Structures are given as structure tokens and as C-alpha cells.
Length: 143
Image (cartoon, rainbow, N blue to C red):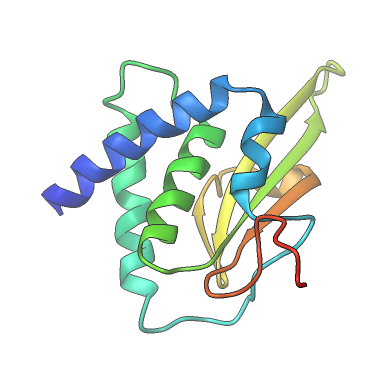
């Protein structure tokens, strides 16, 4: 678990860096836009997904930079990609009671929400990116 914690800290730093870039530059690396990966369970990967989720939540408390939902989703996506596990990044918006627009991001792999599960149900999905492994993604052409 110690190695996973160090890895998640590094990927949270990468996520923070990616968040600071123009989204149009980052989007192509996130996978197929407005597509999703499968919802089928992956029983042989469930423990691994749980450990990655826990590592991200734990190390999020120790970063000296902002590591909220989008940063966590970027980090987890990269960690899953490294392990050959597909995921879908969701971007959502909602309005607070005072009318202020708020945003949220979460990451799903199979039926499991890896990051951002807190309050995700009150957000309307406005974007999603499927990081498929072994298939076409990232805007590749099928020619």
C-alpha cells in the first residue's frame, strides 16, 4: 500500500498540472469524448479499484496544492490506465440554491465509482470521456 500511496501522490501532482492547462489541450488524452466504457463488473479487479480509490482519498489530504474532484479523477484515470483498466471520466454541473453554477467530476470503472462519488447524483452530466484499453480511443481514426 505504501507504494500505491506514493504513486497516487505523484499522479495527483500530474492531475493538478493537467487541470491548469487549457482543457482543449488535455481533452484528447482523456479518451473518446461523449462515450462510456462498460458497466460490467470486474470481480478480479474490484480490490485493485478499491485500493486506488482509497490511496487517492488518503493522499488528497496531504497535497499542498488543490486536489479536488477533477484532479482526483485525472490521477485515478492515469493510475487505472497504467494497469490496463478502462474508465470513464464524467463532468457535471448543477446550481446551488442561490443560483450559482457549480461543477463536479467523477471517475467510474465498471460499475464502481472510483473518485467523486460524494454528491454526484445532483449533477447533470455535460461531458464524459471513455478511456478504453486495447481499443480505439483518443480520437484515433479507423482507416
